[in-house]
Image 1 (cartoon, rainbow, N blue to C red):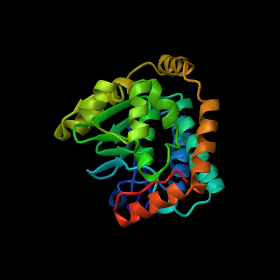
Image 2 (image 1 turned 90 degrees about the vertical axis):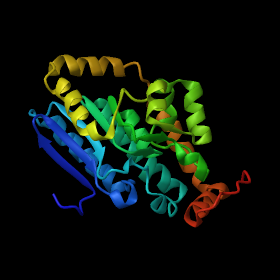
Image 3 (image 1 turned 135 degrees about the vertical axis):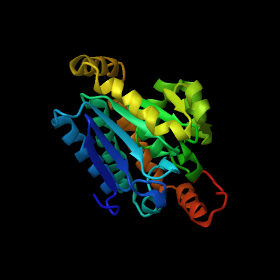
Length: 260
């Protein structure tokens, strides 16, 4: 694997490690990366030596800062719905449907789609440096990769509304108290603690783990909600407010929204 690759995949000791590799862009996601993650998940499902999947971000600053705003700003409403939201849904649903446990190793910022990527995993281990937030509202947008549906199930309706409607950023400890993460560890012990947690899954009974995951996930009804989320996500791309949000982001200023 070379550093130029947007997603790095490594299989070792029963673990498929999927690493987002845009550290200079806080591991923000472009559509090609969704395809690469999807392919890696398919390969992990088919590989009988893989007992667990770990998703993380390269570098010490970010797990994933969400979808690349520069790319988003050039999309039409229909492109935003299909190329971003529905493509993301398709990839993330593979994480839910995977017969093997998936662990998010959150080593830094998990914002926007990055928070959603962590949320869709079965477990979340966070460094004390990690920060979680649905920052889309600051652009005049909403979460488009399942956040409106998954967060209420993890943190409750009130906290989900706070995160999606105010853009509140949670520290790792706040995320732990809210139920968003399973464990918070010191940065200097992060990799070791992730390996220890993952080892318990790798050494566990694969068939029972698969059934436990499948049955718990039966309580999560996402289809109709994700469809509505994708439609709403796309529709917002025709608003003046979103254009203002993108302009303000680029110009590093506070946006002025007019409800248009």
